[in-house]
Length: 72
Image (cartoon, rainbow, N blue to C red; front, side, top):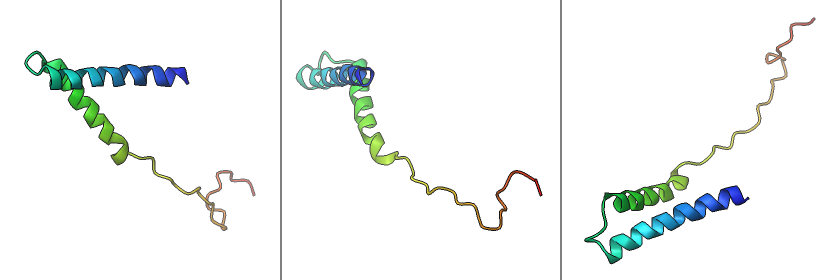
């Protein structure tokens, strides 16, 4: 669980740092802050558009056409 939360907190902190620097000191903010802020915002949209598809389990038909063994 720690392996998941530590990187999330570090990346979240970097994003907030970039956003606050862009808002509070725009004349000193550079390309890195803009890229981090835009990238973090773009990643926040990703889970909305990318979701795992739930597929029903494959059911073999009754004729046995899915069988891989060729025994009589």
